Image 1 (cartoon, helix red, strand yellow):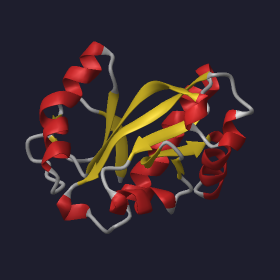
Image 2 (cartoon, one colour):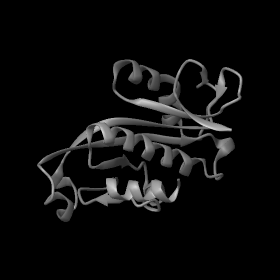
Image 3 (cartoon, helix red, strand yellow):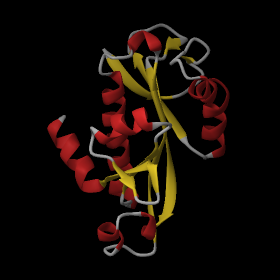
Image 4 (tube, helix red, strand yellow):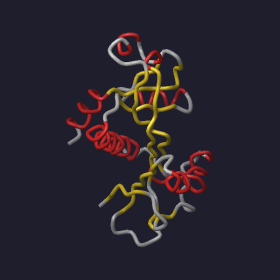
Length: 170
């Protein structure tokens, strides 16, 4: 059985390889430092029964963000105050061994669930992500993310879309 856990020393960061050096480096060298400093939290997908250090099948990181509402579409912006908060999906990666098996979708659904936990306690207008390239942009768009008018690689997933996605995947 697979399980999402908060990244700890019990996870095998060194053995992780998703094929992207910046993502590998973040997990291996930066993720735990960011957690210790309160910058972001990284969650890993592992086999629940794996022995330590547990191999990481994939991971995502989240942090709180604040944006100017005018960076959103005009329709969204007119309903909001000037400064709004949300959650940024800072990184999402799947080990090369497990790519093309639905792990990315599972991680994204888990990230949406974590967003809703935060939303229910503190609010926020949605989930933001900076796609690393056009291929990543297309990947996120299939889940309902929309590009911001100010930057086609910065994408936004509104609360309502997250709620609908989670209802379909529960």
